[in-house]
View 1 (cartoon, rainbow, N blue to C red):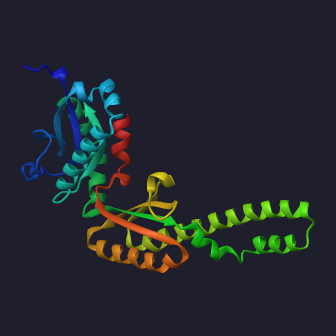
View 2 (view 1 turned 90 degrees about the vertical axis):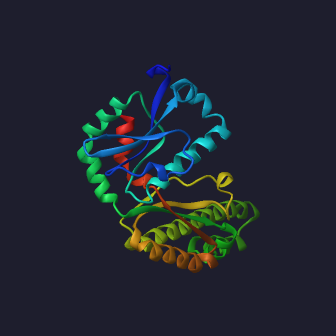
View 3 (view 1 turned 135 degrees about the vertical axis):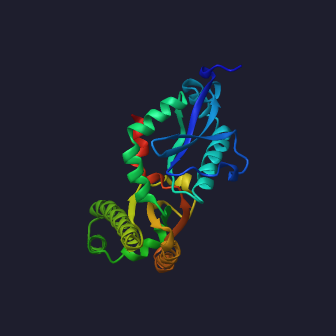
Length: 270
């Protein structure tokens, strides 16, 4: 018989009411609930030899293992959120025992309930924007400083022309970045009235994004479920509006509201 030290408790999400776990298709292992203080945590037991600190660190270097496990993590949380408001926890949130998890639920029950009330009937939607800077460049050719430097180059000496050319390149690059930043701000401002909250996160480097050019916006919006259709339509309309300027917009969702669960992150970090 396995000793308790051979297992860890893997936490997926917390709900206010017991979800129907039998509706989750093909779970990686038997799911069960740890209930305390009017809260229900969806968990399963995992092998310490796989998820223990040192072993987990090694497994995180295995991209195949990570892909399978994170996909299962997301799939289970998304299945639960079909019928329940959830506080999602990040991948590999682990507790030593059910009692240690119950202790956390008791300690933060009031905050968790408040957060669940704030998240009720809402989901997270992601909006990413990419920029074709070659196409965007046409829009900044009339930038005042760039134009003035171009005119000055026409009558300058060869040595000065070189220096002015370098300065013109730098000014054009800055103007492009400013223009792209303005488009990103406009997209967020246009979608905020249809959302409850909005947050921007770090953009993904171009080599990883592999879309239409460098990513200039990586935003998350908390949207009422009843407004989801309007939010998607508004995002698509922005995509059509800005396509001519070299801005391409992607919308995805609904997702568990990870970006709006600071309490969940703080609880685990603590």
